[in-house]
Amino acid sequence: MAKTVALEGPALTWARDQFAQYYGSTAIPPPSRLERREFAAFPFVTDTTMRRHTTLRSPEEFRRFLVGGVPRHVYYSTAYYRLPAEPTMARKEWLGADLLFDLDADHLRGAAALDYAGQLALVKTRLIDLVDDFLLGDFGIPPEELTFVFSGGRGYHVHVRDARFLPLTSPERRELVDYIQGTGFDARRVVAPRHLNVGGEDGADGRRRSTLRLQELPSPDSPGWRGRTARAVLALLDRWESGGSAEADLLAWGIPKPHARRMARVLFQQGGAARVRASHNLDALGPLQEEFLEAVVPRAAVEVQGETDAPVTTDIHRLIRLPGSLHGGTGFRVMPVARDALEKFEPLRDAPVPRPAGERVSITFQETVHYPWGDDTLDGTPGAEGEVPTAAALFLTLRGEASLRL
Image 1 (cartoon, helix red, strand yellow):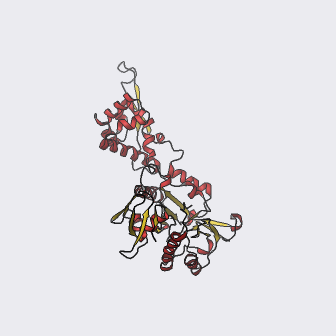
Image 2: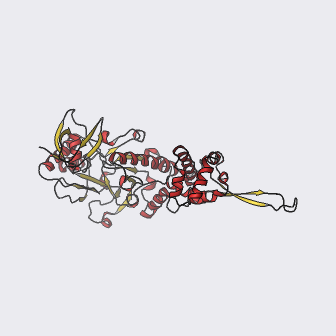
Image 3: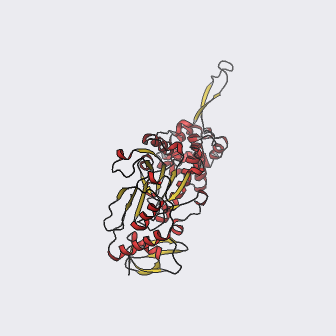
């Protein structure tokens, strides 16, 4: 749930007024099956305790909930209940739940070293991988059954409303997550051994016949994890060839230095990588193919593992942010985004609430900040004063990075 910076006094009143203006002037569509869902909210008060088990039976009640309550954070259940206002799950009588995938920068490989803008860019890339490779690709979910929503913070939600998934239990949803994350998958097993006879026939020319064991990658066009692993190995070779980091990576993966140097030499000085790409087998590496299989293939497969927050997907009683609402930690809109618009969507440009041009608010920076903001940047150091657009002032105030000079 939300990580909320406490506000009080004039700052609390001003921020609540900004949210009230938005909810009073914006027609937010209610979610489907409105009367079967539970709603919950954090009010705009110093005490940030969640208020939940709310039932909204009509679009009019839904609008009053937002306009009259002015919530700082608002959520609704992905589950459908016969009696959603009941205070316990058992008494609510669960009827099914949308399938939900949540990608947040808190849980992504490599995100910790990035700033906020970098995290937003990374999570969008991983979202597109999840959707195109797994949901549309391996799972075959019709595109019209998917809704993509920027969370207003550091991630995205994918809502799957395909009726086939509604009755899935938590363990069944866990199986989907395990498949996406490659849990229990051994990439080495998709590389098939091929045996090649070398030497003459026994007794025909005095030489004994021997068998050479070769390792063959599956076709990159193979379905599921077989093709995904092959594509990952070939992509790794391309990256090494363009970036020259093969030896350093091999050393980091535990291959002894003489072997790492030899493998890099065979791959890129002796043309081994080109032959692997052309033939999809590892015999170009000679005696190093087994070491490549054991150390490199599994590492390549890690790079194509899907990412999603498993507890969110497996929780059949999950509360999720309401699309169209405002995020109480940023002031950004929780925005549905069409699939064909994802690549161009920029949260720091597109998610703030539009305000009249030239409208600005005086602030004092409490922290060092640097954010790209539309066609400009937000820059400040502790104690510095400045005037910034209203949406930027709301963003910095809600994050505790600036205070208002009212």
